[in-house]
Amino acid sequence: MLLVAGIIGRWITLRQAQQADDIEVAARFTEAAHPFERMVVTSSMLILPAGLLTAWAQDYAWLGLTTGWMLVSTLIFAAASALVPTVFLPRGRAFERALEEARAAGSVTPALRDAFRDPQVRAAHGFEMIGIAVIVALMVLKPF
Image (cartoon, rainbow, N blue to C red; front, side, top):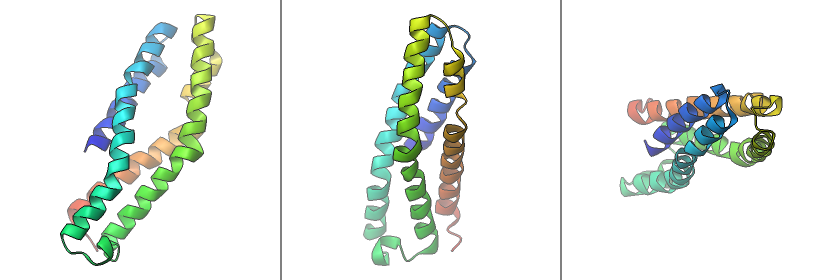
């Protein structure tokens, strides 16, 4: 749930930053998203080991990976994790450059607006949100 809270908190603060017309307000909202980002990073590093330990503690064979819903959840989590080096890190560096340039210019620049609306980042965040929702549903329902 820490991961879910971090994703939602990050989404809300970055949405506010995107809508700001003043560069300093946008920058402050962007900075306010950092604790939520840390929540996402920290919790995502703990999820897989905690899940595997839980499966081991409950005597699931192969740490639960022979159970359909656990295997599907692990695969979704792995796919979402692959977005970090392929989308989030490179696009995050480009966003940081656009933010620095906008602060130097003293206004929200078209490049910063474009960075906020990056379609690859939006798609990756969408996959992340849907993936988390599916994993939570699988955990609760255990359909297979």
